[in-house]
Image 1: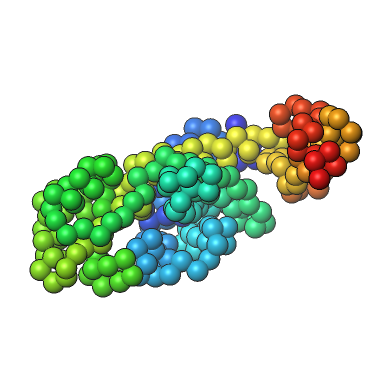
Image 2 (image 1 turned 120 degrees about the vertical axis):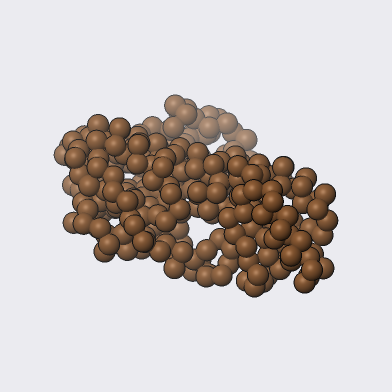
Length: 281
């Protein structure tokens, strides 16, 4: 553990039970004292189902969650996460959970961030007008362990029914909506307490954050010595000219400002000429 965090109080800024997976990690790996943020309304910053627009970028949203939690609870640190869902940027036809987590220091405003991006998600949605189609959709998305949301249409914030987690309730809501509309828009409930898969990704991102906090500055031993710049210029193996490929990673300390360069992350000293702008203009 890093002594900087030992026995420090950390409030977990969530109303969606993320503390179930986050608190044990902060307690066991950093010896922090996790505290709940009772009555904290993080939905005021935006909801997945669209009733309240999500206007802040993930980092600003996490900072705001931390600040709100610290207004409610007297603590040394606050922890927050922010998830985004959509098409995977690198895997065609796959959905993506992009999860970010932040540890925020109350006294200084300094913060540390980690990120986990994965195709391991049940994120999905469909317009459905028969019970059989809904049954298939529900089973394919992990229902009832994973919750569902039903509403009038993808663009509507009317008649939104969230947190559906049993078959009888699902049928009741679905058939009730079909009495009023020709079809029902059904989507996975991506709130953490209704999505065990997302909970696993939040835990993975939190683990990465803790790994980062164990990386000490070589000069002042402050936690979180991390990559802040990618330096291009790995030389071409044929002509020796710099390429656009990564030559080194610059790590820095947010306390004393010390920096250190780490060689190419794959321990390569030269690049294949096929990636050289001089050999292959």
